[in-house]
Amino acid sequence: MNTQHLAWNDFQVVLAVARHGSLSKAAEMLGSSHPTLFRRIRDIEVAVGATLFERSRQGYRPTEAAAALLALAEEFEQRLKELDRDSALAAQGRLTLTTTETMVPGIVPPLLAQCRRDLPQVSINLVVEERLANIRQREADIALRAGGEPDGDLIGRVVCNIEVAIYAPRDWPAISDDNLHRQTWITVDDTLAHLASSRWLQSQGLMRRAAVRCSSTLAVARLLETGLGIGILPCYLGDASPHLRRVSPLLTDFRSQLWLLTPRQLRGVPRVSAALECLTAGLREMADLFEGRRAKG
Image 1 (cartoon, rainbow, N blue to C red):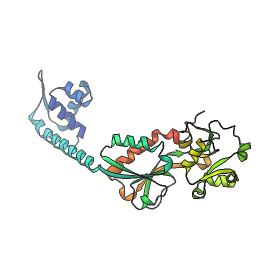
Image 2: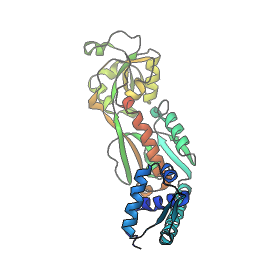
Image 3: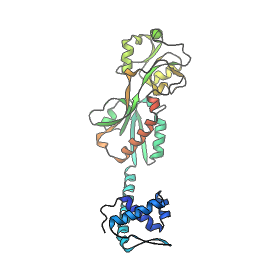
Image 4: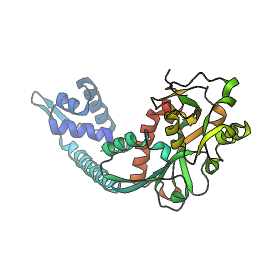
């Protein structure tokens, strides 16, 4: 009997019909239909050159010719179960995720809740800090942060863009390009001078209008919420706050990208791969927030 042209789903069909003795029951189990399974059995018999089932009012009964095929199908099925079990065991364990503090208030909690539901066998250690050294030194397995193309031993995937805009307290007077230089600003300090928005504030002379300068973008957001002034924020912080409103178009010159990074040596590690897929799916559901499409009036 020639089985070299059969696929695994062909073996599944033969197994299901042999076990249930009925096309209708086998079709229900496989999520198919009686006519479809009838054609599949006929095509499989043509492919192997043998009659596999005796048809009668009592149902479908395997022939002697089907015995070897069924034994092979059961062996495949058992090996696949063992592979699934081994993969599940390999995906277990502890995983360290590092990200910046701006991601913590609204982004990280629903992400980790989703990962907990999808990957209950993985325990996540969350490290909140700005530097990338921890993942470069293999102190973390995955990094979630804004940035550009990774270098060195890091590999990654872009999830979406990160847009920024100018925000003001919700009851702040009208803002326009003409009066930006008369506003009170809350800005980042020199520790975040590398940010494109920070360089723009400096070039426009707006740093001189700063009532408070912060070493934390999250602190800027919280101070804006108290009514101290206006400032530049990523949209995933500004649009998420009920106390702030966007008072400028998207500042696309300051656009960055949201990356998930991991050390190259961890490529293909089951728990890391599974967590990356879960995080990517969750973050892409939030793409509207990151890309500034949830602005409130």
